[in-house]
Amino acid sequence: MSIDVNNESGTEVDEQAILDIARYALARMRIHPLSELSVIVVDAGAMEQLHIQWMDLPGPTDVMSFPMDELRPPAKEEDEAPQGLLGDIVLCPEVAVKQGAEAPTEHSMDEELQLLTVHGVLHLLGYDHEEPDEKAEMFGLQAAIVDGWRAERGLTGPSPAPTVS
Image 1 (cartoon, rainbow, N blue to C red):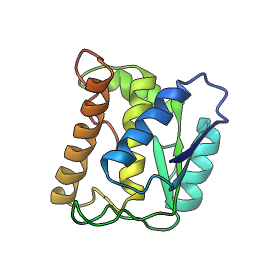
Image 2: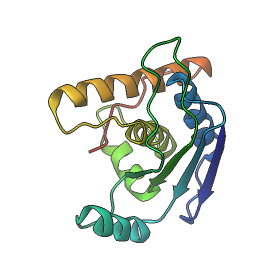
Image 3: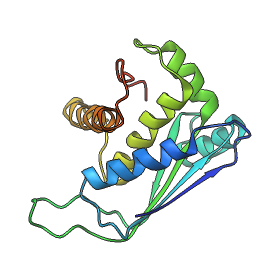
């Protein structure tokens, strides 16, 4: 799996954890190991520009996903995983700090960025949360991936509750 993490935000973030959880999420979703993903960490100003340009919404947001090859997980275990360019995930640590502090289970910026990375990966794979059934499926899968990743690393305490909009 080729995953690039580029921090342009000026904020120190745990880039290795972002890389590791993205790799874990893609493996868990059975995406071909030769697929490519880019994760970009930007400041609030850059995120606000993207949010206005692509969503026509004011202010910065937490995460945006820009799919390329529209890869989807294989339907069955025995199916071959698709290979290609997944796309870009853009994260904003300034928003992540606020969301982590306001979450039902308060958590750090880095924990929020890990959650947002998984959220972004799922969006790249075609998951959405516009409808209640879609939201239940996506957020359930998101929680399972984050919990699995944390368990593999022996991380204790509650996993971050979903705070993404």
